[in-house]
Length: 230
Image 1 (cartoon, rainbow, N blue to C red):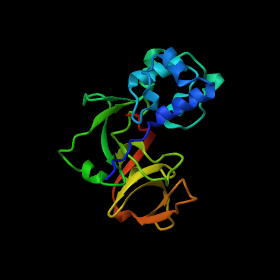
Image 2: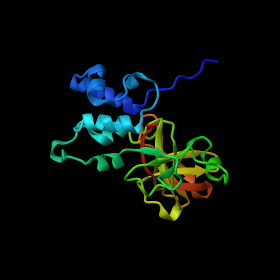
Image 3: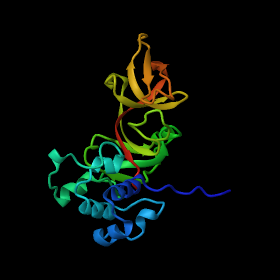
Image 4: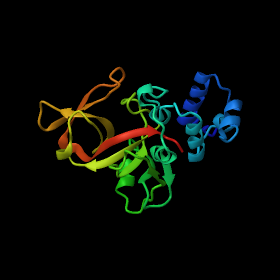
């Protein structure tokens, strides 16, 4: 059986898009930025140090776009403010093996097998993710599927916070474990008080569904998502 080839990091793809937009060759970029030579052509992740070097090289890049592919590539001129190295570093996602730093990341897909990992008393997270703005999250995991694009993309990682049915704010995105399926959707009220409406963002390819509240085992607020960077 042929081994599946690892895909290039979305962050690397965005760096290459930025360089193309600026008319800069990879050779020129490596020479001027100090980023590890050849790293952008490799089908793997990118280190925190190399991301920091790119941000120092490209102060006009929109960090949210770099990490999530959302928004514009270049910062809005009205908010083009010099940022200190400390602030820039804390805005970037990093990993830590120190259990006291960041939020646990479990290398499991929410749609496939997440609840077995979540309910396990012996499962150990693969690492911790450290990123500003996601402090409310209690865990991170992988996500597959296209029903919530372009808000949440196939291959992203999502930050979750466990909640209850009483905590639900209708119109927001939740990751829900039901008795037979797991799904990530916008939740809304149903005309039937015993049900909830599960609404996709990608309505071209996916339909709205309704499920009985009694089938729900666990509910997690989706704090946000980012492209997998490691």
